[in-house]
Figure 1 (tube, rainbow, N blue to C red):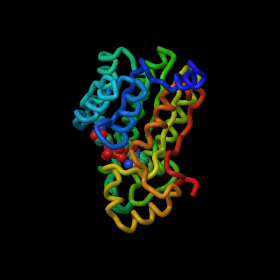
Figure 2 (tube, rainbow, N blue to C red):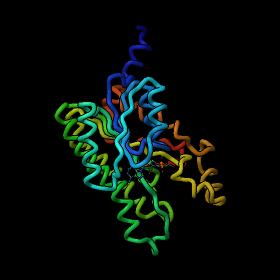
Figure 3 (cartoon, helix red, strand yellow):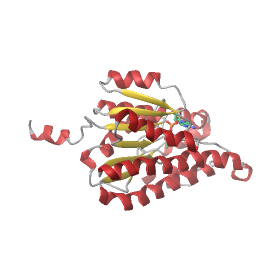
Figure 4 (cartoon, helix red, strand yellow):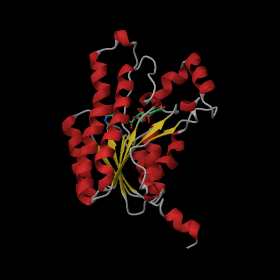
Length: 257
Ligand code: NAD
């Protein structure tokens, strides 16, 4: 093997098991497929049907095991780590991707929407990370990748709960990293910019907001789910073993504009 091959082997996820929440569509689906393409076996967890992502992961030469669970439910989400471990015996990589957004002016924002967003986007991430974290601590290795947002850094408009939840994700990423980086577990986040998924359909349909957002992205386009494949594989692999507590913006340059 040449020196290039030696380096590339550090990016390989062969023999690793990755649990991806919300793998059915959008960013989670692209990341699950990216991880499969890098050699990992995939466990998907979420409320929606995972037939398509399963077929794509298998086409990439990986195995796919789906766990249907509402991660907004404390009891259901607790069963996820347990079932993943029963099925695969280990979790090397946890990608906390499931998330929702609810839009309303702050003055009219309901406590129900506030709770629903925080429950899935923040509480579930904390619970899954600590449950998987206990297993990773026992093994002395693991990678946790949380999906943050531009609204981990900025305030956004008419999405107060989402902004609060994603700021919390940035803080939680650093807090867990501080405790676990010395114990073989890297905890990082990816902060996607404005990406074309169901999550942003309302924004893209709003002509004025769409034009404003696009004109403000230095790369000149919305991001595609595939744009996350390289970053998530990097943060999941041995190539990033000295990277922890970092929030990697994958945003076409938005944050620095
Ligand atoms: P999406 O709506 O296309 O997909 C969300 C996924 O979460 C789906 O698989 C869905 O089934 C799952 N999910 C929803 N409710 C769930 C529940 N109760 N239990 C379990 N799973 C549930 O959204 P997306 O754009 O792919 O977003 C994925 C993540 O990326 C979210 O955390 C989102 O906040 C974040 N994000 C998205 C963008 C963007 O521009 N699309 C930007 C920054 C961050």
